[in-house]
Length: 259
Ligand code: COA
Image (cartoon, rainbow, N blue to C red):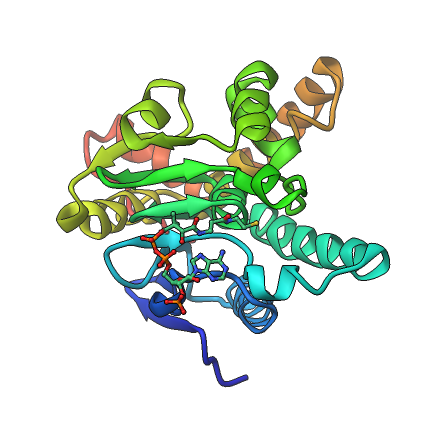
């Protein structure tokens, strides 16, 4: 598929996906969502990509939301399809099986905030602004925001943002745990790449199993979760990486993981 609204680059096992409609603040129209679905399917099946970074083109926006000129045409039937399609694309990102780092370089509003929420780790530039302003349009978040924001920052805080449409700056997003780190806009991508390289340097089976275990936390009871953790731990114990990692420690050298 030829992409019109996203850029895709692969370097050193990192896939960098850039939403590229800066003149519309990278708003997610249908075409962009189809392209995102396609690129993340490719990344899932790629044997070389180990970590993904997603960001927005330009200096102003990560993604300023779903494209309001398309939203405006929805009715009850197409509205349901619209939300279900967006949710499926974002759940595909959340369950990719590879870490996805959101490098939030400006406005992350509505669907843009929801896109960042579906990512594994969020990093922000100092000028980033998060928000779920859907109430201003007479709708609610429909790409997973009501669920993921409430889980991440607690329902009281999430409801304040969802009910008022207020924006939150990077400092506040950091304070409440929505983003892991805040960097200057200039350094954001470089820091995201450093984080990606650090993850890539580890045994990749352990990375995958860590994602599986932590991602199950909202789906399983504590007992089920602990059982699942023990099973995934056991899988790791059967790998070459495990032998290499533990031997390297005991031999006082750096491990060389093969996976
Ligand atoms: N959908 C479609 N177009 C959008 C958009 C969106 N979500 N967000 C921004 N744009 C477009 C604007 O219409 C404008 O296009 P134009 O130049 O053809 O008129 C362009 O992007 C630049 O945006 P503009 O509003 O002029 O920039 P600003 O700096 O004055 O304001 C925002 C920035 C983010 C505050 C403002 O664009 C905004 O409120 N966007 C909508 C956010 C939103 O409600 N998102 C949730 C949707 S569910």
